[in-house]
Image 1 (cartoon, rainbow, N blue to C red):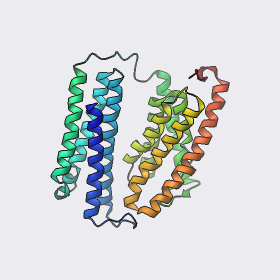
Image 2: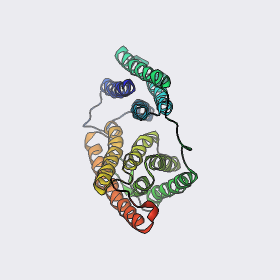
Image 3: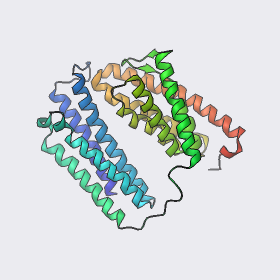
Image 4: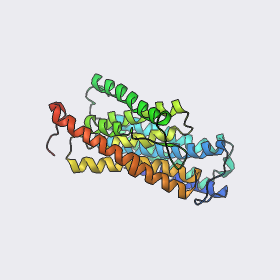
Length: 300
């Protein structure tokens, strides 16, 4: 419980600090921002480290609750590192004067709560983890479909680019993430979303590639939790995953391009990119489940 509370503290502190720094710069959500690339990288990194740390702490709390105390402690520990990096980011980029004691104390309190949870968890017997983190089949699936996902993004970007209001491009390659997540679960879906997106981002030199870790990681993990569930649960999970993907980019775009353009981009990402990708991926999943008995759903 304290790990989850610590994650909430870390995430809330990060968001509050970003909003405070933006207001110090005279930022308005209704106008395109006029920061340098250096300043934009600084703020987006601050968002990433805080939210990534919060997500890992919450994940750690969930895993600990399931009895996997060592695995949960590992996730929480990495979350602390991410939160700590967020705490020192302003000083590293030369904006230490904007890092007030309120944010330092809030971030530190969150990390202390996570550490307390880790200490309790490590003193508790852990449920044995059966088998490797990924089977040989899952490793092959992650490699193959991460490559396919990256190719789909790069192909759209270079061959048939559909411009986005924020200067990026619309693509429907996300169907690969939904497809794999529903068939193989959260681990494989999350890895395909992260690895495939990062490969594509590095190839096209997208400057805020680290946001893709959260955006497409969640896009794969959330639907993956609905593996072998009924159709309604799977659809809801896909919609939530698509919403979190679009919301992740919206939260960054709102201070880069301003509120109006960020809203347009969010609508496009949610209803066009995620919506069409869900329709394609979900249809392919149903075809595979009917064709291959190994993937047929269990009653739930």
